[in-house]
View 1 (cartoon, rainbow over the protein chains, first blue to last red):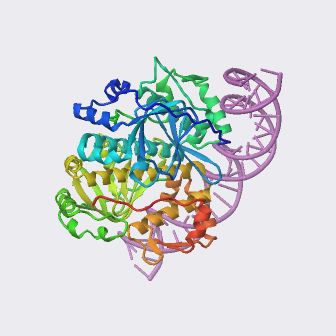
View 2: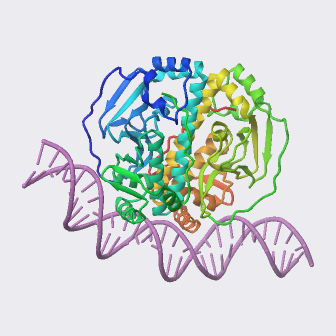
View 3: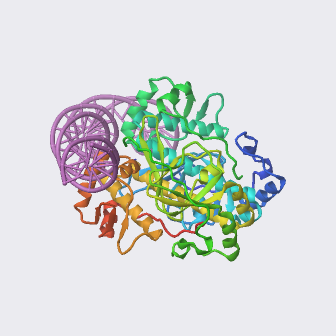
Amino acid sequence: MAKRKKTSTTTAAPVQTPCTQCPLRKLATFRDFTAEELEFMRTFKSGELGLEQGNTIFVEGTNSPHLYTVLSGWAFKYKVLDNGRRQVLNFALPGDLIGLQASIFDSIGHSIEALSDVVLCVFPRDKLWTLFEKHTGLAFDVTWLAAREESILGEYLTSVGQRSATERLAFILLHLFERAQQSGLVRGSATQFPFTQEHLADAIGFSLVHTNKTLKQLRKTGTFKWTGSTFEMVDRKKLVEIAGYVSAGGARRPIL
Amino acid sequence: MAKRKKTSTTTAAPVQTPCTQCPLRKLATFRDFTAEELEFMRTFKSGELGLEQGNTIFVEGTNSPHLYTVLSGWAFKYKVLDNGRRQVLNFALPGDLIGLQASIFDSIGHSIEALSDVVLCVFPRDKLWTLFEKHTGLAFDVTWLAAREESILGEYLTSVGQRSATERLAFILLHLFERAQQSGLVRGSATQFPFTQEHLADAIGFSLVHTNKTLKQLRKTGTFKWTGSTFEMVDRKKLVEIAGYVSAGGARRPIL
DNA sequence: CGTTACCTTGAATCTCCTCAATACACGTGG
DNA sequence: CCACGTGTATTGAGGAGATTCAAGGTAACG
C-alpha cells in the first residue's frame, strides 16, 4: 500500500428510512421478518449515519456504543501493521453488519473505512442483549452473519495463501461481483466498483505494481470489462475456471 | 503441502465426563456458568467422541447432525484446492467449538482433522435452537466464539498477506503457544506441539522447504527451543519483536 | 493550467518455489 | 538383530514470480 489520505468528516441525519420500508428487505437474498421482529427492529434502530467516502468508521483496538448495518454504499475492513503495510480483510455492502466485534469484545480487531459515500443504520450496543433475550430469530441471524464473515475470511486466507496471482485476482473480482449482486447492486451484468487497484492489491496480498500487471493479463481473457468505476461481467463461467473454483456465498438471513 | 495419509477410524464411548466436572471450567480463561446453564449443558451434551490422530472430523461442503467442542487434544481446520494445495485456516484446542458452520449453514466451509488423538464433546444440532431460545448467555457465548474465530482468521490473513517469512513464522509460533496457554496445556514454559513443519507451512502460506529454512534462521535467535514434539518458550518478548506485533487473543467465555 | 489521485510500464533485485538428494527415527517382518 | 519402508527434517542449486524503484500518462478538480 501507499500513503493514505484523510477526508473531511460528514455526519448526518437522525431519522429517515423506517425499517418497515427498508429497501433491502425486498431483495431475494434477505429473509422475511415476522411482525414482531420488524417492530423490534424499528425500536432498535436509533438513527442513521451518513459518511463521505474515505471516512473512518471504526479504528482497530477501539470500542463503540454503536453497532451498524450498511444501508447504502461500500465500506472495507482492514488492518495496518507497524511497517505501514495494509491488509484489507473484507468488504461491507448493503445489508452487512459492521462493528459486531466491538459490541461483543472490548474492542474491534480491525479498522473500517467508507469506500464510497455510505449510509449506515445505527443501533445502540446496549440493546443487543435485549435482542438476544427476546428475539431468538434475530440472535440467530447475528450469529449467522458472524459465521458468514468467518467463512469469507477463510476463503480469502486460502486465496492469499495458496493461489497464483491470476487466480487470486480472478477470485476477488468474482467474489465482489457476486456480493454486489446479492446486495442488489447489479443492473444487467454491470455494477459500480468504488475501489482502486490499490484496495484490491491490499486485499489479495500483492504489490500495487504486480496487481496492475496481473490485471493487464487478466483483461486479455475478455471475461470482464472494467473501465472507470464500472465493472461488467462478460464471461463469468470462464472467469470461474481461471480462478480455479467457485465460492459458496449463498443466501443470507440478515438483521436489518 | 504434499501427499496426505489416511488413518484408521477409531470412534469411542457414549458417556464419560459430566459437564459438572469438566476439567476445562477450572481454567482462568473460561467464565463461570450459572447453575441453570450448567444443568442445560448437561442435558445438551449427548456423548463423547474419541478419535485417533489423523482422522477427519468434518469434510468441507458436508453437513452434520452434531456440533462439537474439543475436550482434549488438537485439531486443525483446512481447505484443499483443486490443484492439491492445502491452506490451514486455524487450530482447535480444548474448549474450542467445532462445526458451527455446519449447524448454521447447510454445509461447512472447511475440513477438520485431528492433529493429535482427541476427545470431543458431542452436541445435537437440533438443540442449538433451544439453546438460543432458553439460554441467552450461552447464545451470546456461541456468537462470541464465532466472532473470535473471525478475529483469529483476520490476524492470519494479515500475516499471510503482509508479513515476511520470519515474521510469519514467529507470529504463528507465538500464537499457538498462547492458545496452548489459554487451554491450560503449558507447564512451566513448555508445551507439546503435535504438528509437523508441513502443517505450519500450510498455515503461513509457504512451501515446506522455505518454512524449514526460515525456521533454521529463527532458531538462531534463541527465543525458543523446539525439538521433537516439545516446544519451550525462552524469550517471548524478543520473539514478539521479531514477529512485529502482539496479537490480542484475550480471555474467552466459551460453551462447554 | 497546476495539483492530485490513480493507472501503467520497464528494469534490477530479491524472495520464494521446485527439484533433488540426504539424513534420521521408528516400526515391521524376516 | 538387521534390512526395509515410511514419515519427517534438512540442505543445495537454479529458476519463476514478486518487490521496489523510477518514470510517465491521464482524468478530475479548483
